[in-house]
Amino acid sequence: MSDLLIIASGGGHTGFGRAIAQYLPFKPDFVIPEGDKNSEEMIKDLARKIYYVKKGKEPNESNLEIIKNLFKILIESGKISKYKVVIATGSNHSLFPSFIQFLKGAKVFGIESQDRLITRGKAIQIISYFSKGIFLHWGEQKKLYPKKGIVTGPIVEKPKYQREDGDYVLVTTGTQGFKRLFDILVNTNFDKVVIQTGKIDYNQYQKKKPNWKFFSFDPDLERWISKARIVITHQGKTAMESVVMYRKPTIIVYNKDWIYAATKEDSKLYAKVLGATFLDDPSTWESDETILEAIEKVSEPKSFEIGTKKLADIILNEL
Image (cartoon, rainbow, N blue to C red):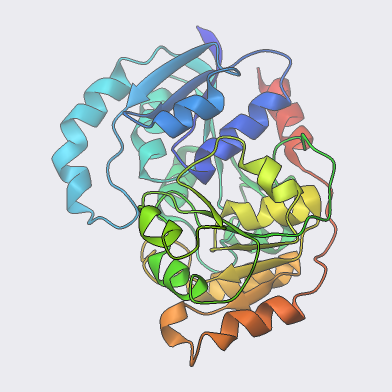
């Protein structure tokens, strides 16, 4: 029997897995989504072994995709060795590997998303029924899991860089990108902007703004965060990293396309917890001036102690 398996389910979920691995005295084993090169790049230096399990569906896809992929998911999950402790980082990808490990006798822990303050994530809610505990970032989340919730503080990586007050605005909106937001930003007169576009082709924007920096992905996004003047992001994990790790003034722009993610009210409270500025989806803005005014008025965020070491210590005591 091996000791620890981390199910790093892509995007910010893989970020949780990488953060935990940084605080461990050994290399754990990982499960990542099949074909997810970005996750592989993120954890390959921290992993002893990597398993690949197909992801049931992407955030913008129907639940029918899970049914289509279920047989392959179960076969791949069943081939994974038995572990003492399993950490499920969230999303539908974590669900089946963690449950099969539970059936094999593993102690399972889950991680609720940082932006869940009112509603529970569907996958983690299910995992909570057979898990030993659910790790939480904020005391405000305890009401979601009154019996099994374990508040550790924000689960982020060890900061690699010194905080610098740079001169550019960083825009980063996750793997899927955020076209409505990008379309508005490229019509502004900002001089220094860096945009991570995810799966959206940035060439259409580079032609309009040849002096701006565009890229699809960067496994070292943290470097860009550490030197930014302001960070603009969606209701994801980067907002927490920006605030907790580098105390950057942060603007959270709600993306309504994330229909299976946290609600707008969750996201508003998430911004309040961080001390970040909240903006509704760009489709609701009266004009492009909305983002300009937010940048002018953005304030310093709150200060937090990183909670990942506390989580790692709990896991080590379970092994």
